[in-house]
Image (tube, rainbow, N blue to C red; front, top):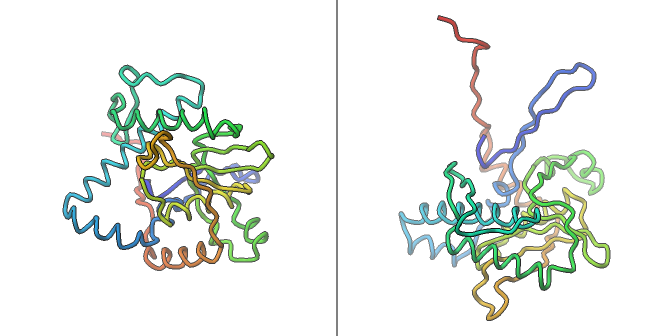
Length: 245
């Protein structure tokens, strides 16, 4: 599987047979929402380099998440000596920008983020489609997804949150949809986006935004995504149990 899919092995309690449940990722589904004219202008401006820039920023975000996960586990992050494995399987230290993103997260935790108690971090959301369909009175297909939740937390009032980190300077609708899908999957009351290394604030190097998206937009986005990706399935291959000469 690739970044478009999540898999989970499920054992049938009656037969003991293991099957693999495959679901599309939240980021793939939400990413189908148009990012708007400014993003389109950016694509035109960068031309063929756009794909390389997007891949580079994807790896940057991935590495920042690795550093934040270490910080959340109670271990300090040592930018010049700690080694993390990037998306290509290469071991390396954090770049300057990635380090600044981890620092901005730590600043948020020490300042505005101290009102949150961390329940879990970097854990997979795997909703029950039938239960959510009954709860919202709609089709179960709209909840057949999975994704990685950056942070599950509870605030000082006891409200449950799902929080997603972003290294972008803008909050696109695709990011809002992503958080909303996590929020409903978790049954959380509130959802938020934490922008890391935010450059438009003078002192705070982060920006925290609460987001909530009506279900009508989730449903509309799903219908478009389903139409555009119809027939796409994970690559499957068959292998013999053993290879003999």
